[in-house]
Amino acid sequence: MRSTKVAAGLRVLIAGGGTGGHVVPALAIARELRDAHGAEVRFVGTARGLETRLVPEAGFPLELIKVGQLKNVSLATRVRTLFDLPLGILRCVGLLRSFRPDVVIGVGGYASGPAMMAAILLRVPTLAFEPNAFPGLANRLVGKYVSAAAVNLTETTKYFHNARVTGTPVRPEFFAIQPKIPGEGKRLLVFGASQGARVLNETMPKIMERLFEAFPDLTVVHQTGARHAETTVAIYEREKVGFERVRVTPYLDDMAAQFAAADLILCRSGASSVAEVAAAGRAAVLIPFPQAADDHQRKNAEAFVAAGAAELIIEAELTPERLLQVLSGLLADDRRRAEMGQRARALAHPDAVREIAGMAADLAR
Image (cartoon, rainbow, N blue to C red; front, side):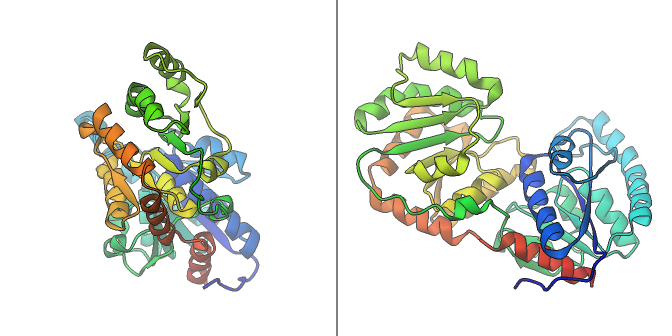
């Protein structure tokens, strides 16, 4: 349910970031709070995250704190992080006392933990947002102490106090995508998030000619990521794959249109990617990034598989033959792709951003 507009003067601090999976939804929530609730919104992040670029570009103030990683790092890095953590909390206490927010929203990532801990200590209402099936460390630490939580999937509610399944904010263009009508000219969309995925870039060229032989009407759009563009093109050329039916590009800036044109999607299973797959209602093959914190991408993919909305291939088990088998099976089965797309759309939440902003406004009261 959408909240009514709160009194003027609502102040909101949004803490966290790092990856696009945290920053992009956070910005959507910030815009909704500003536009629908008249809120003044500020962000807290770290110097190493995407928030340093995306938040100022979106027109929101950003405060930086120093805090590092605790997971999958060396002992020396963990020691530095444990030393910085109390200082980060003290810095956030100072920010809260100067800005005096009515509610603090933690979106996960490095800065989320210290800011949420500071808010809990000062008894400022807190809202945790968790887009992944398994929460990151910051949200796990504060999950039982927050005022409320907005999560993407039902299985995530057990980690939080007063949790509600709201879904993850996704651009409206994805929800406007219509079911793909089977016919001539199938399209496969391949991408590995904004940075690309080397395993996909190395494996796809090895099976492309066999895919084209099996599906003469198939075309492929393959987004490589900027770092891997030249090497991926070189692999295609080495495998003697012509570029008449495959478009290889470092970056796609029309992703909603690409989803709409696709019959099948091959991608990683970060929070933003799976949320867009759900919103678009498209069948997908998910290859989780194995180094993702707490293996959360695998858990995201498993949730979609359990719902019948996707197929999962673990990267350690990804071979050209296995990938060819899975892609060929789905491209040949129009009915199964349509059913997977319907099941994916059932996991989507068109009103996610309004519901999350409404929860924050309610807590501020």
